[in-house]
Length: 109
Length: 121
Image 1: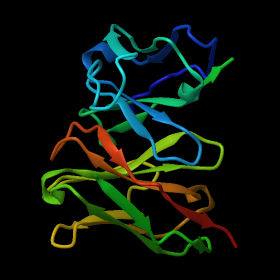
Image 2: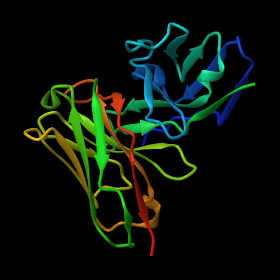
Image 3: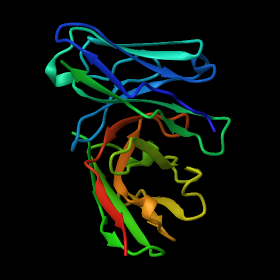
């Protein structure tokens, strides 16, 4: 089955830019979605189809996808952005198509 | 505002069965695929199962294939997950999620708060 690889943790100072990666074999050929998950809360979709933002998600959140790496970029990071972030794809070639990455814990220093 | 309210989580013995429910409101339920996603203690999100808007197509993770059954009642705006032959590693918070489209490929734009299943003797 398809595997998505995310670094376990990323730390960034307030006001700086956080770059979260999601690796997968030829992931650039797939649509990648990103979720923010704070403890005890429902996950939130922050980027869908590589780079689109749902209504209500700030423009500080952006996405890209090429080759073997998809990237979620968060500009002007604030304390409220501290959360776990997961990438996700739907692997249409698999009998078990839903796939999440292992998640990255974003810490705001 | 879209709302997804899960229920049915509890403590179950290994080998037991349980059915989770997810009651949806504030959107046209029969126009969107739905899914279950779980998070075991200290672990990440794991996709469990999904069902198309009509209910005609279902999809399962390898870890639950043959033990779990997803279904929906579009007349009741409710999603279900029948879980059989439960194991300790099924212990998790189970989230109900609304897909952005009626059929795959899927991403999930609204999630419930989750319901806790504990499998233990």
